[in-house]
Length: 191
Image 1: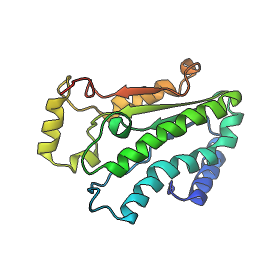
Image 2: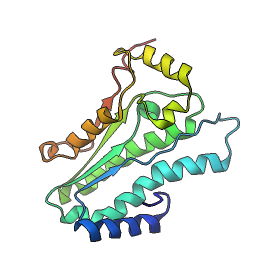
Image 3: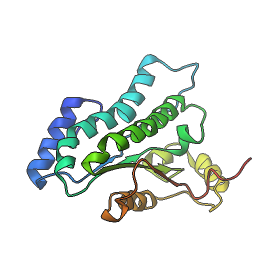
């Protein structure tokens, strides 16, 4: 366990993982928060909490894992970003959208910097997935979101996991700096 927004916490977590498992082959940078607040009502603390978790957490996690990813037969970094920010927006999530778009800019440069170490860096961009966080948005929100998705259902955690698992695999070794959108077609309609 660790707090991704604290560098020392990530370094301690990585040391514990290496002690227990002998190394690190894959970093799945999945930590994220998305508290809803409008731009007008947003405080410095609201902004900082999201950026520190979603964006700085990615940096601190990768920095802590990097020495071990370099030693791996093939190192993989899989970022859980979002369609929000990079492709779409959602009222109340401007700080979340900014953090998720920033992750993708980071991903592209990290992919270039780490290619010589045979480490790939890619991202999964989930659409609406039925998680505890989404359940907190209410039943009406869930129904409306499912109705707006061409497959007429929300994604599952497993749907995202399968995409991440592929990007973490040996078979994905020639893919870096790329995104996979996993959203049931959510971003396809024009209206």
